[in-house]
Image (tube, rainbow, N blue to C red):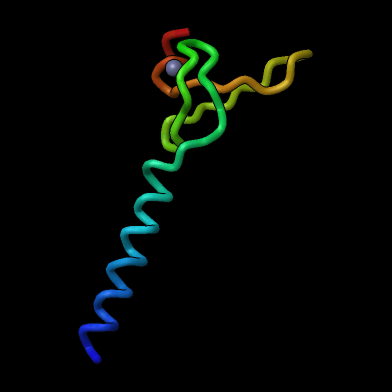
Length: 62
Ligand SMILES: [Zn+2]
């Protein structure tokens, strides 16, 4: 009984961790053309063009 509860708590924790750190968005970086994970996503509003998306590091360099 106790073991069953332990297992489901572990499964839920690893699922949450994956969503936070490695979630792959459908956005592609304007600088390098690679897909961007949620933790690296930098959205930039460009006047007259709408939104553009960068990796955080690539936006700093751009
Ligand atoms: Zn990039």
